[in-house]
Picture 1 (spheres, rainbow, N blue to C red):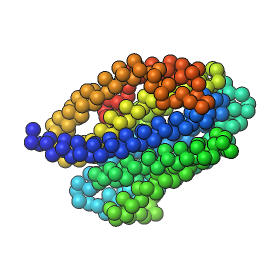
Picture 2 (picture 1 turned 90 degrees about the vertical axis):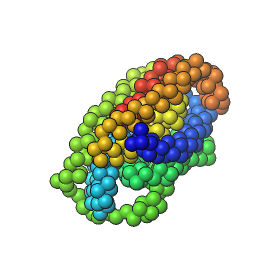
Picture 3 (picture 1 turned 180 degrees about the horizontal axis):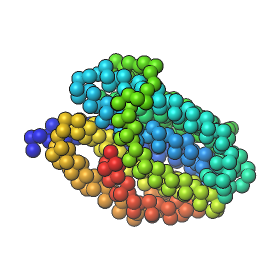
Picture 4 (picture 1 turned 135 degrees about the vertical axis):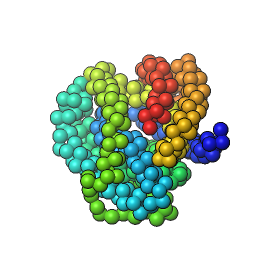
Length: 377
């Protein structure tokens, strides 16, 4: 019991801070969807924006999202545990350089082939006008993929140092940028305003974490080596997580593919429902996982297998205790929740009914999504 008291106490303190900031971030995310819903409802233009968002999000998620964090933090933490901070920062620099290079190449290729990708794979059911808009929006949003990739790595570095404040604040600034863009620019720019918000938000997401790098005396070198054992270890650890995330992302792509041929607003309704489901998932699962993962990594690096198993068991029990009631409430109250949160402006009763139908199914999967957030790490 004494073995686990300190790690669990540390996780509890970190989780409380992260959870509080996740609540703020999710609240702003909710405000973001309320503003977007009031401006665009479940319109064809919003469908195009959401379809355009899928490929940039796919590239970020597979290359630099949860897969990289899950692989990088243990490898980086292992070097910190050996008091080899110089080697740890050398690894971080090499991974950062490789990451920016890979994402830049992929973003350029995606921009070049955006039109055939949209026409034949992403949204074949769109009208030619919707497809042209989707291509234009996608090319601009690919810029944010590279920025988010680097920002995600910085987040992993700070979490490895048990610093959670700035990484948890980053999504707050991202949401604020989109809210202001949708509120102030959408009346004159239309859906293009959301792209401005995404790109500016990505820049803020990175910049807000820079003081943390300064605090921990970050060191960068222009080195790039796939032969480095640390880089190879990160790539090896990424493999299983990439496969798991790929399945989820393919599911998103299939949803867009199928919904593009349905009635106008189907993609928007799916997106609203998904984001509402993510409110409890983010507040509980992502906050706890973010706070617990550095402790998991430290225990694994020290070879404390029994302590790691005990910590994981306690975390999963807490997660089930929180998410099962949340899933039941979300299913039972989906109509009043959607009506209260979104039904205003261009978001009418028909949009509420479409979103509630999708949310009924998403709420059933809430517990599973929450557990995967922990076990996949």
